[in-house]
Length: 466
Image (cartoon, rainbow, N blue to C red; front, side, top):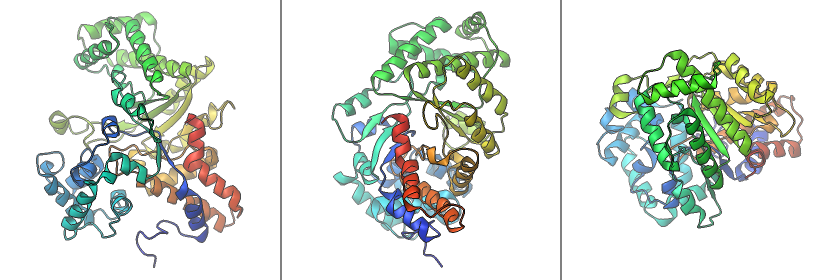
């Protein structure tokens, strides 16, 4: 029987052990999508305790705690940090076979050299030991990133953001790069006209220009897009339910914008037309700057109305949605491709039923200009777990080129989440090695080693030109 979480965790063969220990483990991390707070990196924040570093903002843990019968005050409420940690420790024994169990133990081991299982009995000693370490200079935010060999961090930033913390950090000329990524979702969020107007007022103020029409909205977005580019941004990201490809005229979009400015509600058709125009225009901006565009799609968000009204979005009440995506996705990319305006693109689906659709769709628009111009991103959110990763890797392997894959990203709000890259790398090495052991791939250590290193690091570095 294998020992839990030993050096060969998830590695089932000698070939897997070789690929991981001799190749994967040494590669730096390029984290090209996450939700880390730039201010905390620029200011090199020191966390008071592990709860602040580990549980604040982590909706994966909150979902597990709620399911375990833990009251909301211990998740997002006013309970003390120790009380929240204690409730998490009480939940952990019930998380067996959930990825948060593996992540929790890996994070304790890699950052704090804590090998004990987190349980109600061990909670206090683990809390005290981790807190002592977090209060040392080596365990400030940048120290945590250095421990995981992180080379690039791409945060997620609204077009109205000042990017002041990216600028502050850049002046220090650190080895690790901190890069903004453009997330213009709110400029398309027209379901609520009042919220939309509040947002475009803020967006206009960031550019010193009033937004009074759709044309002026695009002008401001272009100004901010230029500003982001000047500050090192080379990636955009969109959170979508589905791709929008409604037929519209410029006059229709201006009329829809006029309705929004008057705080009038839009019909479903008008919403679709506006989103279709905005998504296309934003994609063209990315192409013109040579950026990579990312699309996260398929989430059904804010399902719990009562908790959404109480706490807002992104607090653990989202799920996989069931949206029809193939036709609209094809039409969206085909339009851009036909006009010669299709940027490098990464797609992340949340519904596993869409795996084969995405894996085959990216092959439709590869043009030979760059290896893997269209990418299928690693298992996202609810698919960010062993089976989800294996399914994505296997499907990409048989319908595309796994060797050209740009690999893992963190997509986390926690600086303690970087062992997820280790988790992915172990799964990758075990998957490849299984084929070798079965005689389905040649036992050529040079080719296999290069393949692993490319997927873990080199492909991303070359693809993003970092």
